Length: 92
Image (cartoon, rainbow, N blue to C red; front, side):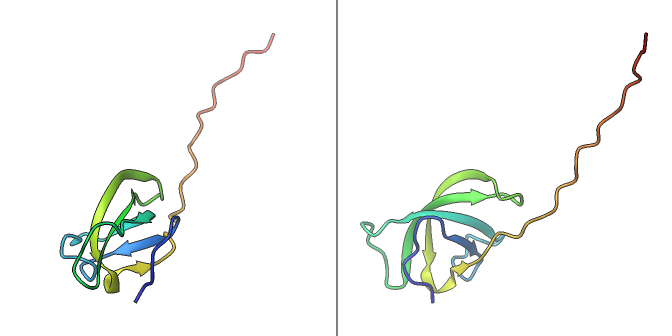
């Protein structure tokens, strides 16, 4: 079971955290929202949803079961280098 989440933590949310995550997502935590009252074992967090490249695509407030939250590093997918087209050069 994960303790209090802090800014910068990377978490992986699946259906173990809440049924809303049929498609698992990665979230970079901004903070927990302890002022919101919840059921025992549940917590509100504020964070950025990340895409496969690790870029923030949406800021969200999420209600999750603490026992289902997994601390994890974002998997890094290698990016292909942009292909540059060479143009002929005129001399003279």
